[in-house]
Length: 382
Image 1 (cartoon, rainbow, N blue to C red):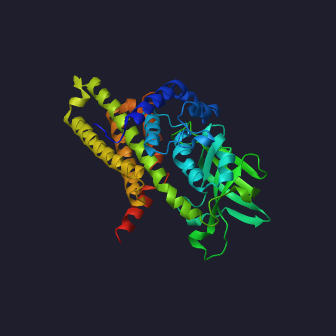
Image 2 (tube, rainbow, N blue to C red):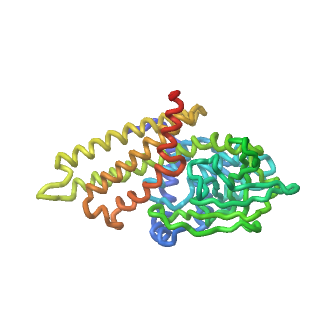
Image 3 (spheres, rainbow, N blue to C red):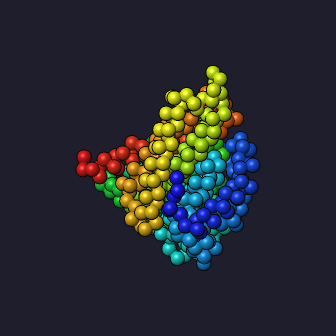
């Protein structure tokens, strides 16, 4: 189906991204999955080819392009290649907006050049062992000590957590019981700070090449110059940036689902049973017809949301709708496609098997399906 969301610049950029992934990522991804981490040098290579840091201003070494459609191209090409390891979308789609919008001039000069060059790897620490989706339940604390903050607590499920040089940590800076959503601030904790340590590189069922860590903070002294944004305004900053993060997930969901569908369609045409291709059986045809239709419809809605985001008009509710619907569709797609592969779908040598396990996180991170429905439901006044 033709998509008119992109212009010539985006199409040319797609060729660059696709070529980079085919040369620098795809041949090594299996090894990275076994190692449960990608090499740090990959980020610098991506930046050199314009795949990373393109939305950072030119004065700081970036490409100077603030257009989420370029982010979309990277997310889609990684999804199609089943390259779940590189944390490029975390850098481009999640971290960059915090730095570009919230960092002051001194912080931008200090952080953005290495960020744009892929020399510094970043992560964001929101989730804690006991909080999950309940951001207001965050217990990591930051207490004033002169001109510094003393940060104590723990985070878990942190993407890029092992590789990260800097982590944007959500911490409780106002301990008063009535502070509510105004109790939190964003503080940048850096590699090498005393008291900052990493736990396990967590063993996940999917996205094996993406390092995902536990992080610990034991009275980590963080200078006040590392306060990102306004004090006690973290919840506001998070709510402002989460719609863009959720669109990134929705984009990846549709691209990954379409890719596994296309592979399954070809498999259904060539794999025979009872003397005929399995795709010619009515049940198989109906399953494939339903998925093809739903994927087209999902793509139309995602592209409409991308157009709104490009114009600065995307709402949190629209992003929530896109996130939960597309990720649930991705689950149905990979599940049905694996079933059509029969026993071969259960084998890791077939791409559909990895697609099945990689996809499972999509309805959880960035806000669970249940939280997304809550956002949509509240907007209905019920």
